[in-house]
Length: 217
Image (cartoon, rainbow, N blue to C red; front, top):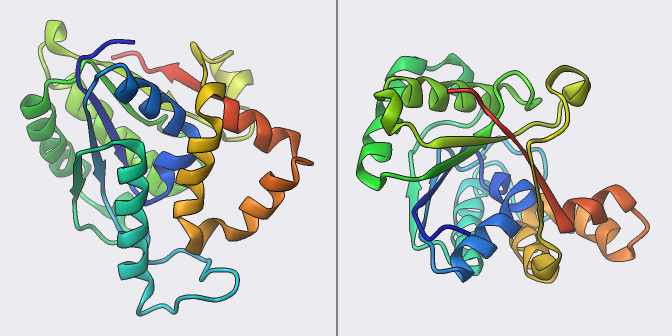
């Protein structure tokens, strides 16, 4: 695992927990640094905890604290809040957003960026974030472009894109990854119950294997 900087860019708190937490933990353990850009506080999240722990007014602060805790568990020392509004990324000027990403890329000089695969990440904010990342990377001279590893989980992903290019065994980090997911309690309490029952084989697979598609840039 390279010790060169890793840049993670997602729109919502908890996006980092499911598909990439093990990869982050592995990278940090190897001595690498991680910069995590989170665009929003996920203030439009559907869940309010189980039992209920939030309302629409208090949810942003709760999710900020959850993200801070998750980042601490992951060993992320460079967490950047972009201060955007949840469920608005798809309507923003993506070239302007790409410019903001470009500033971070030039500062951090990552070897690799992890984000969502545009068009295959289900949520419009996921797709828009991935698209803006790709625009930022393609604006760089070809020899300066970092690798872009993307998460995709829409129906038909493998039919359209083929099998993942990267399969990372993160079984050594399973329990720590579960702690990261638990840190986002306002959104994940019900899910955690299912995971801990170990009856959900798909969820168990998610905890021990992380899948990425290299985006052609």
